[in-house]
Image (cartoon, rainbow, N blue to C red):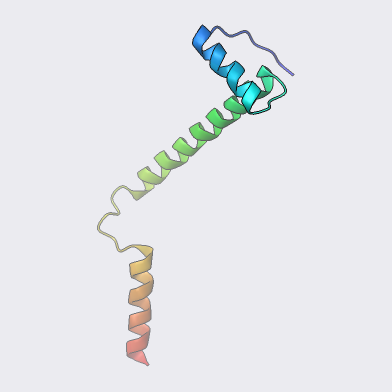
Length: 80
């Protein structure tokens, strides 16, 4: 496992101590690793959101998937 040295405020250290105690982490390292995993997931999710927005740009005038399915069903019903 890799290690790193960080500097933070006394307030954040107090908050970390509280979370470690109340959330029953075995150590500050476990709590910080959990926070890093959360941060990375949040970053990846924001990248997915950004990509979805890029894909959606310019499609505002197109029908939604639901509208397309309903229209397809209505057309099929008319043929029957």
